[in-house]
Every structure is written in C-alpha cells, then in structure tokens.
Length: 116
Image (cartoon, rainbow, N blue to C red; front, side, top):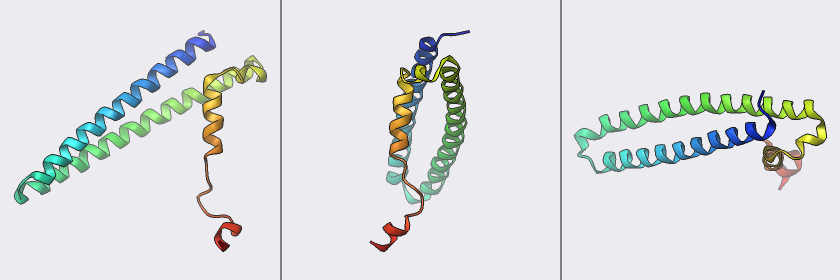
C-alpha cells in the first residue's frame, strides 16, 4: 500500500496533467472557432458542427475524468481518517477542499437576499 505522501504526489501530478490538457483543449477550440468565424458562409455550418461535436466529446471525457479523480480524493481523505483525524490536517488537499467549501454559494438566494 502507498503512503500518504506518495498518493498526494501522484494525485497532484494527475491534476496538473489534467489542467495542462484543459489548456490545450481550449487552444484547439479557439483555433477552430477562429477558422469557423473566418470561413465562407457555405462552410460555417460544417465547421460549427465540428466545434459542437468536439465540445461534447471533451465535456463527456472531462466529466468521467473528474468523477474518477473525486472518487480518488474521497478515498484519500478516508485513508487520512483511518490514520486519525489529526492526520488529515497535514494533507495539502484538505486545505484546498476546505477553502473551496467556503466559496460554495447556495443555488437559490436566501429569503433575506431576495428582499434586497
């Protein structure tokens, strides 16, 4: 079984790879949209279809990848809890998870926000 630091290192590497992949995908999409926008009218529809198809493929793949990474993160946090709750405080992902939790806003405004 891997130790916590090895797991964290591998998870960080996979996350960095995913972020680099997203950047590359964004550049590809920007290029395709620029080609689509500058194409003659009779070619735009086909180019638009290819952009939409690529977007859907990327989104489906990213959702699968994200789900897998979330499962891995959950298992990692559970590993920390088995090691003792104070152990989780030393995990670099715990701080990130905790700070992202603070940024979550409810989908619907509270009754006091609606009155404003």
